[in-house]
Image 1 (cartoon, one colour):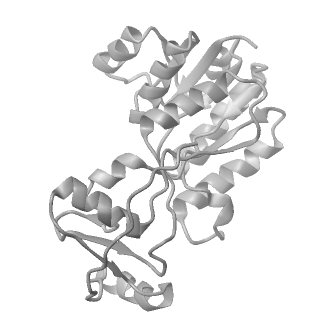
Image 2: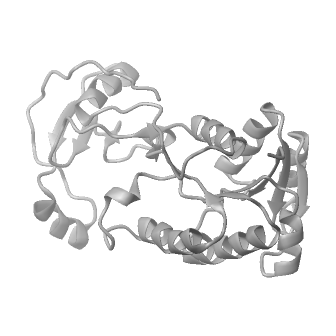
Amino acid sequence: MTSLIVVAGATGKLGGRLVAALRQRGATVRALVRPETTPANVARLAQLGAEVLPVDFADPGALTRACQGAGCVVSALAGLRDVIVGAQTQLLAAAVAAGVPRFIPSDFSSDYTQQAPGLNRNFDLRREFRAHLDQAPIAATSILNGAFAEVLTYNIPLLDFKRQQVGYWEDADWSIDFTTMDDTAAYAAAAALDAATPRWLRIASFQPSPRQLVGIAEAAAGGSSRWCGWGPAPTWRPRFSRRGRPTPPASSSSTPTGSRCNTC
């Protein structure tokens, strides 16, 4: 398989890492960027050794030419329906027209195949694009990496450093998949260069439970944390829709088990 890999969405946080990971593996990278991309972003990709090609996704001919000669087209595009369904469908059509044998969509999420439709907008957008992808005459690989591990530093309800608490729903021992952006990019680069990669790749850098996150939070914050349940979904969902994030009920502190990392 040719080592030329086309990357769309290369100026994003994941896309830039993906270009770097591909270059580290000796691949030739053609980074597709919007015509209005800033010179600084173009320069950063060029410094990584990528061929940077401004292209208008609304121009099918130009987009097809941008994909020609590639062994795989990788989408790291991020956005809502106009991007995940609209722009990716344009990119997919161009890849097929250019005779590219493989396509990696911008799934990069929790395993939406295990979730019922209609519960999560972003998962539903991926399902909608998947219907187009599975009908196209091209091999595909979707990478499901759980949540990006970087979100654990954002003071989210799951790991709230300000309140010194770990919140969860229903099960404190449920393992949650997290993968760093660097690991996700490394897996995606390896998949793009391997023609034998299967249709689905499910990966995780580590899989802590909420109970284990208590120990992680204590080690990181240097103080005590408490873990608390927010109750089963039927209890908290009405409060969430009326008043935003619910206040977790009071809970006694419990000694957590030690944290453990399960690497793929």
